[in-house]
Length: 154
Image 1: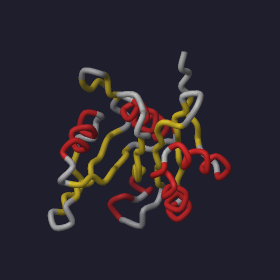
Image 2: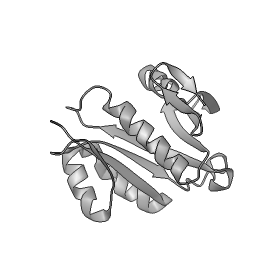
Image 3: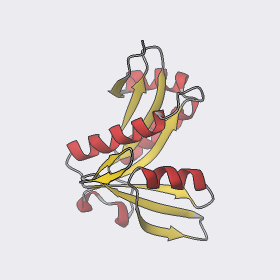
Image 4: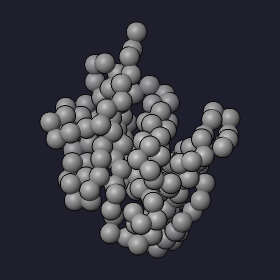
């Protein structure tokens, strides 16, 4: 039986996270520079997913004054089960709501149709900014709206 456990990462546990998810090495510096927090999902043996939430991104459209958090990264290990990414994202949105934030924003490449569909299916239904030359969208989700398997409900 697999027992999933969500954790808030600390400096001591970031090394283990990076060993399980190699892309997670970048998170520690990002979090330190932009005042953020990292959450991870442990399946009892290893970390399978992680998310990084930033409180300050030095961008007026992503400011704390507007009660927004910025989802800087959503990482999933190569051998993670299907649906782990969605569970990690929903946990992160719930934590943002618990911390008193209303909105979560994230940046997605305009060329990554799979990522755009994924975020849209998880409530990121508003385009805050579209940068055609930089080829990215900034998507936003109201965390007060709960997302179910078959759509949205308040």
